[in-house]
Length: 483
Image (cartoon, rainbow, N blue to C red; front, side, top):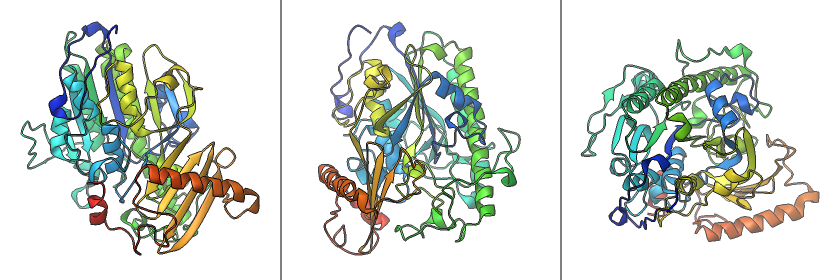
């Protein structure tokens, strides 16, 4: 594209549609999984998982080995994570932990829509319905909320919506297929009906798998047997100390202590759902291939967050360990590097400005993320010096130079962890109590404090109770912060 498109965007009213020469525009397909560990991909070394289509994406693109979600103020990590992705803003910059995306925070599809793109969404939208309609002019099989309910047959009978131009979305219909298949059906239909001379598209396919309720879909993907599952190397029957979230919903899905049999069964169902998603991803990509659009499409694959599934004695994602806060992120860009891995640190909310740079569209003024385009052009390029991670009012962490420092404050009881991620990627050896590493620990704590101030964190590590009073921050309190 010869001329860079300028679109000064402070809100929807500031957006302006600009026409381009169609041949110069790339399509964008953004596929987002739900609660998927970055280590649950065959191409990343997990030989237990069957994921040929995701493996192909890895082989064709640039993998970001150190991509993270910024964190969450409450237990539903996917809500702020998805809001951060869509707005290009950090966890302390999204409204109500991502429950609402205000008009002043222009979403990525909203910006592309204003610049001539046909925008389509299917699957999970964990924010308000009005922001969905601002973002997408088309959509189907839309799920508003956090998860499918156990008492409603879970993924087997998903409660979904057809696109409603009024944004009211009153009564959902009950899907007659597994959730992932419903979303893929909608995406395939959208892509199949496009004509060759149509506007370029941005398609967002947000799966609700492998989030629980977990059950393997019969007839799709690959069947996993619990007795064949290998336990994670950092499997523990229970977490060694109170991290502040041992009684949240995710952690009471199975009783303490976690037995090997429990975790093997959970892993079998978890991997089964990933393989089923993989099949549906294959259908979508095949449709692009048949429409002769694949070579002109930027493909992004990521997950909103990870999950413990038995690691460190935990089941959920309400922690700052690698298995939960670090995520898979792969970008396939026509004409750029293939099958390479970048070790650069990045946030998921860096995706927004990256897509803008690739399409030569000026990001909205509300975006605070940093473009990964230099890393795509040179995977050895350093992107961020360090990452700041936060969970609720009692967990904070810093990642820098392949080391991670985590600090907890549970009702005034402080616990510290220091991990050498280069030699201990599974975070099994806590060096925080080793006198040899006291200087590094103190240095990381000092940098963490600086990051907290820079991000306008409501917590203060120098207070006995970080938020100024004892007790866990309630969901209602979390929603009122950064409103």
